[in-house]
Length: 389
Image: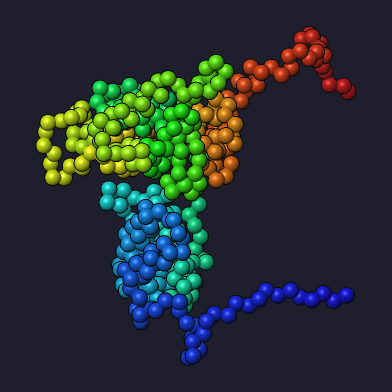
């Protein structure tokens, strides 16, 4: 019996009166790199509602400082002149590129530059701004990922916490921020995006809203808890820390409400001196009450680590997040619960912590002693079995 051949429907592009493929956008004769980058960012933002400005800024930086610079060095003034051979040469160019810090690009930096360039060039083809797709022959960089999460060591974290000056409002604020990153697993962008209303002391949890979450999903993260009279309650020292910061925030910035930022700047001299200060702020000083920025949190952690005698490279916001995931997995927190707390989309991302915590597996089984109470027949040491002939 003959079977009918199944064919995929053929997609016919839009054709103009002259027979050429009609572009979706009005394209000048020579589309330069600056105009193409601006058009890409505008259309990408429209096609992906809710995309973060930080992500668009990352795309812009990668295009302007990487592929546009390479094209200028090769004398390619328009995107239509860029061929697949140029794209291969771009990969080789990345190997020899030196950053402003006089260092070569890391493997991750090369991967991001190439991925952004491929996304940009593929978009140009899909929008019919260039005639050919030149990205098919160039693959992504394959990175050797370390399965071990690079977490801040517990001893170093303790040194950093003990080095903070809790006699100043900034010390209390910084301690509260580090607590939420190290003991709740919040990302730095999620931390600075919190409002005062997101901190629920009665329920003992923090709400991470969808607009601040990487996965674009609202989730609730518990503050460090303990068992008291058979029920879960926030640890008293954590509750007192958060309440102290809320009081200092209200006193330093009385104009702020519950729908304003939870962690804010405290004006000039905020790193070392208590408020109020009698000094007159300079013209470049940030006024009190502004939402903290991610770069400011990183600077605060670096300074605290240096003061405590800890390598600043070990005290980054993401290493504190790894500390939360790793210690939770070692303590026996189920993978599904840890996945929800950390806001992972896939359990495979959370499984990294469980796999590294596998070093505790033998100790856990030895302590459990699952053969206890079961009579297992065995030989005496002098009756070792011998192979039969």
